[in-house]
Amino acid sequence: MDSQILENKVLQVTKTIEKQVDAALEKLENLDVNDIESLRKKRMQELKALEEKQRVWRQNGHGQYEELPEEKTFFDTIKKSERVIIHFYTNTNFRCKIVDKHLKILAAKHVETRFVSLNAEKCPFLAERLKIKVIPTIVCIKDTILIDKIVGFTSLGNRDDFTTDVLEWRLAQNEIINYEGDITLPPTEQNTKGKSNKSSIRDGKYNAESDDDLDIEDFSKEFELKNSKNNSDNILTREEEIELGLIEEDDQQNEKDN
View 1 (cartoon, one colour):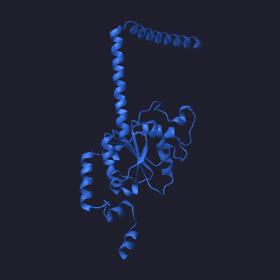
View 2 (tube, helix red, strand yellow; view 1 turned 135 degrees about the vertical axis):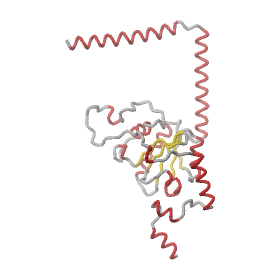
View 3 (cartoon, helix red, strand yellow; view 1 turned 120 degrees about the horizontal axis):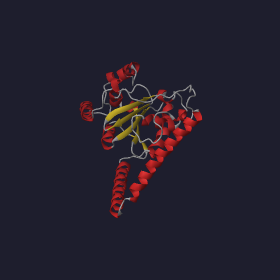
View 4 (tube, one colour; view 1 turned 45 degrees about the horizontal axis):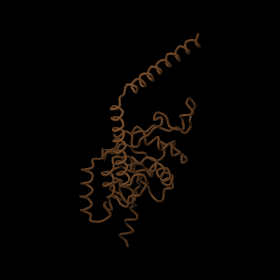
């Protein structure tokens, strides 16, 4: 009985697909020369537009993974590119090298997004405003708005040997890159449905309640104001650096003694 029901369902699905194929073929058969030419022109226009977009992307540094030389270039970067992924790193954290390896691969694959890195110790203003408290942290910005943040490796299975595919899937959760795979399941679980995974990978639906939206106008003006007041590369005061944990109070006392 169950076998008969299954066969009937398969037959119904097959007939539905056949009808859809027949309708598509009929539509193609009814196209005249003008319709075909119109479709060809439309496709050519789409290809030219994509080619021009890719040219602008590459001109703005897309397709490669680069380090921003200083934090003020951050503002130029997020103004020029619609989608930007920024890796905040330090030279002393070995896990940052792991992130570098994966982002270099993804930068070449996803030219629609700009991939950059920034030394967290050299950008105290951004570290404070973007609440960078754990290294490595990956920040995703779309249309100058902070839309996602990957803090450490917790959402990547909490392990150092996660794959590039896993990071790609995690980044795609908030559409910072174009993703063609199954967005509902991480790559490690797509072929093991129903099986338990000790190092589970969490989805990345970003909760922005703990972070303010990144208003590029207010943010950049505040940066320029603070920069002009300090009139140096060190944007934060010594007290602010201590509060952020970028230097120790003992270091400040030693400088005073010297």
